[in-house]
Image (cartoon, rainbow, N blue to C red; front, side, top):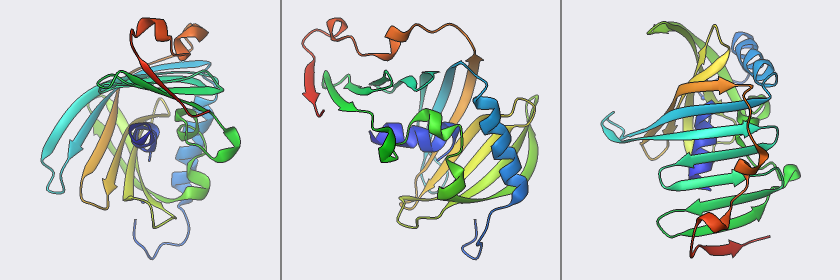
Length: 216
């Protein structure tokens, strides 16, 4: 689930000086607006680009992925991995191994889901400050610098860029303690479209010979 966690900490997310003890109310206003806007969507379909850089800023890899969300359901396809959640069960399929790991979605466990990252994930887990805004093409984006409260996290900074007009997340950049940098940029987004429920469940008939690892 590491890739899902990084996606989560980044597409919609998933930090500044260690002297800071409270968050910036202007940054909170931006994040609250993003959360409120997301809650108005019945469905979301988005494409994204995932980029990895080393500490010197040299690009190590660039890949693309897609995500679909509807209520508590979601599907993520990304770099040989497919993740399905029908609201109760999660299937994590590894294409290279032709193996799917099955587990339960426990809403009470604090498990990270893509939906949580678009809503109020920031309130308890991060300190944040609004760095300002800039133009990227035709968009005006607001950048929020976020610092995890828990210093044992494997990352120490997250830079979140919000499309000021649309009030949606445009990109997320995570700085790992080990030096690498991960960024996700939303390349396309469609909301309130029709999504059939069956796309959020893994259909093993479509994957001949798949090995099932059932952790339920």
